[in-house]
Image (cartoon, rainbow, N blue to C red; front, side):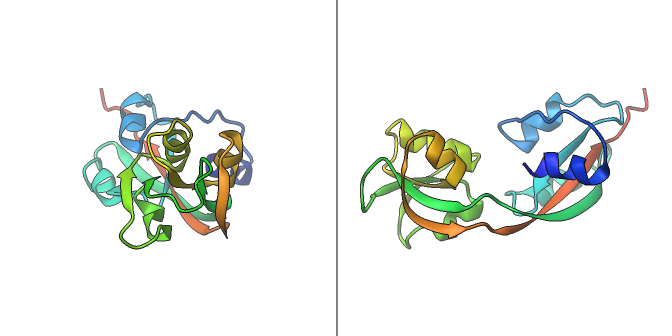
Length: 155
């Protein structure tokens, strides 16, 4: 949603491709100067991605856009004992929760829906898509996003 919003704000037409992680996206994106990556500013190790790739990646923009409602959801348990969460929203979980870290809030919903954990922190959209029960709705979170242009190869 954030990538589509950035394209809309720029007044350009583009294609948005989803990847499992920013690291895998960086490996898949053509190095032709015409592609960019959108990153959530709270992405774990974003600083490592930026400083480890200065030779091929530049931040060209930042913007604020609210996330979808963040929710604590389960497959039906009213007090889940195990949870899946992306590292960023992990603070929304109960203290001392047993957590399986995953690469995205969407993946957290999948882990819960498939029974690998009893609960998750995900978005309302993913919870509804996977038929999860919302135990708590934290609402949308105003979020900063960074846009990184993949620099044209010198070769």
